[in-house]
Amino acid sequence: MLVGAGSVRRRLAQVALLAGVLTGCSGAAEDDARTSASASASADAAADASDTAVKSGGTIGAAGSACPLPVTFDIAKDWEAEAIDTGSDGGDGSAEPDSELAQELADALLHQGPVTAACEVDAKPAGNIGFLRVWTGKPGDDDARAVLKEFVAAEKGASKAKYSTFEAGGLSGAEVKYLVTSELLEETKEESAVAVTTERGPVVIHLGGMDTDEHRAMLPAYELAKRTLRVG
Image (cartoon, helix red, strand yellow):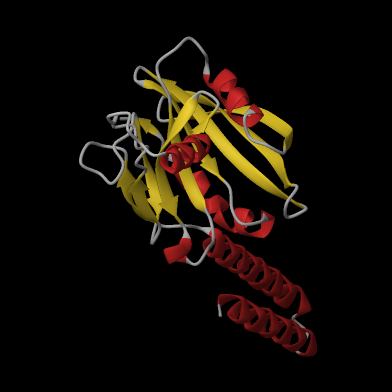
């Protein structure tokens, strides 16, 4: 609706310009038209920006939140966070073979490189298909970039990784943009992740998605998390 209003304003500016010419005041009318057109363009740009903005739905990571973590960050409005149960509660060693197989499969999904899945933030309530997943690891000597490289290397089908650095809330971390190709689906999609190291260990925040379109639609929520990232 804002874009439509901008179009109306542009038409009014054109009418004003024509009226000025007809009355012999073309110079002043042209100045007014330029001002109106400029204001209209600014309004349209602001409308476009608001379309891609995302509002915070709260902060997770602190003790007592949905996902206690070594860091805190904001999640997008309507996204739902839930801690991931890794099932690492020991056991008496009497599991059936089928249960052991299921555990092995679960372990393969819950661990990637040097980190273990700790939390997932579901985008479905906000209308997208995908998750913002948080992975944590044990304290060590690796910096954020090294952790991120191991994380990507452990993902089957990953390629064309491009690394960079970022800073937020006094933290210096690493970021990666890469592609993942599924042999089963014969499709390639974009994925993104950031990593930081803390006294309690490394943290990786990863955004996937059903496909590249879904991934790009969820990027504002990912950027919100990155921008508000703080040590817990």
